[in-house]
Image (tube, rainbow, N blue to C red; front, top):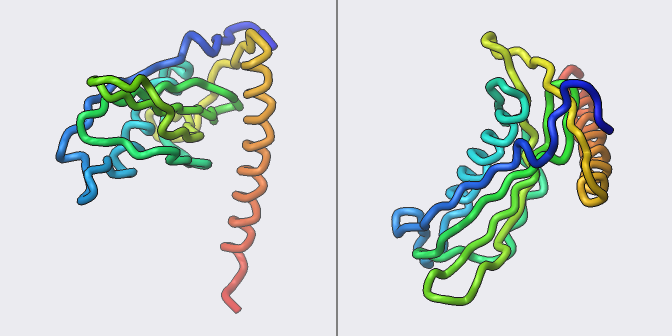
Length: 168
């Protein structure tokens, strides 16, 4: 799946590591989901912008799964990987792992799929380079992402059609 000007998945992969502090926590001592989502959005932006070589905006979040709680004092790593690239839209998969620095190892605490769109200076969608798929794991994730993107397109078309109909 390589073509001229294409970029690899590895070239845009990014990660952010953050210590969770008391101001990130809810009344139970767990980190707010919104705090996790903000970091997911930031790392997805980095990955998409690296690939596009242009500013990107968040178009959608889907399939956000909070698998286990994150606690004050945990160090959380957010790893973002491109799974699909269209004309201007890109799907970024973000895995979230937490670690108690006093022991216990790293554990998967969440993941999400974020659709980012590259934009020009006027905010209009702009084309991005194609994605080079290098191995079977990337090929599998790409195929899964193609199916999710098709569902997103169909859902948007249905929603636009419903919004265009006069109220009954």
